[in-house]
Amino acid sequence: MAGVTTPALVAAVGEGGGLGLLGAGMMQPSAIEQAIAQTRALTRKPFGINLFIAPQPQADAAQVARMLAKLAPYCAELGLPPPEVPARCAPDFAAQFDAVLEARLPVFSFTFGLLDRARLAALHARGTFVIGTASCVAEAKLLAELGCDAVVAQGAETGGHRASFAVPFDEGQIGLFALLPQVAAAVEIPVIAAGSVMSGAQIAAALLLGASGVQLGSALLATPECGTSPAYKAALAQATDTATQVTRSFSGRPARGLRNRFMQEIGEADIPDYPIQNALTAPLRAAANAQGRAEFVSLWAGQGAALACAEPTAAVMSRLIEEFDALV
Ligand SMILES: Cc1cc2nc3c(=O)[nH]c(=O)nc-3n(C[C@H](O)[C@H](O)[C@H](O)COP(=O)(O)O)c2cc1C
Image (cartoon, rainbow, N blue to C red; front, side, top):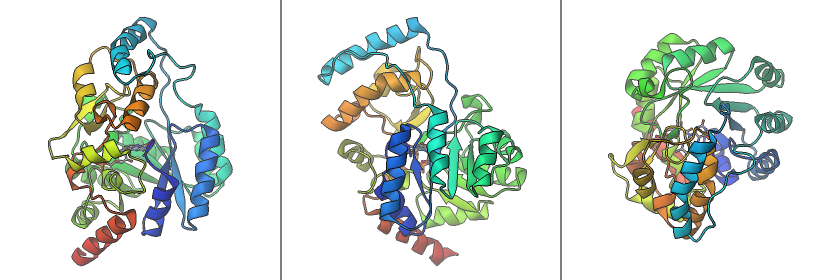
């Protein structure tokens, strides 16, 4: 989970019987190296890392200017200078990937697209297990054909951004209960279920529907090890089943989060594509997190967010395993 995973969370997931993944999609290479070293200092368990394979669109200068004008009053409300276009909207993927390769982690996962064959071969040559991310059957097939070792199947319930790269986002809104058996039937590689998996019963159901494992997201957002701010955690504590919505307003790419004032006032029209909008809103979101203003924070969370427990990661992990063991 880019932006909120910490070395402490990754280590605690591993120690608790899972496989922690560092969400490094928005990190500079030096920060990636540091986070890997910090995680290694905290645990001897294996862990992996996740990067974004995102298109880099050309900015439409007029559209960006309109968005900067829209954002200016919110920046003023938080005591920030007027927003600006940063020199770079996202870290350089090639440099991020080189830092990851150098670290020789046992697991690499990616989302938003397809990794190129040369980089996949480089990972495999180092013995790394490679996981792709899909939000529909067509994407899962592309990842299997590419040579991935496993695929995450993300249902429409999923918190944050989904893979959504081969079909238009609106056509790929498949609930996990429907998606999982179709992906499992379509590919030979192991399938990892994602989409508001919050309990042992849901893990058992995912395995019955053809998954070999599950990917947790929202289930860990309220833990003390997670890098979610106090404002984010307070918003999660108020979440209900109807509290989330998919929006492009924060990042320029559809993502599910807790509904708030920014989403509602910015709306969905005339938003620059990811990663441009993500970069334009970054200072606003950082200041809002620091000032406890959840109305301007991208509160990424899945439809099951109300089931997230504010307890240590070790307790979440052991509860899920105990619930699962009692059923299976
Ligand atoms: C705050 C947040 C950040 C996320 N960041 C990433 C990411 O960087 N890479 C990725 O592959 N998936 C990311 N996801 C998706 C999760 O890996 C996972 O599939 C998702 O959280 C599962 O849905 P759930 O939150 O409803 O349980 C993120 C999800 C959340 C909630």
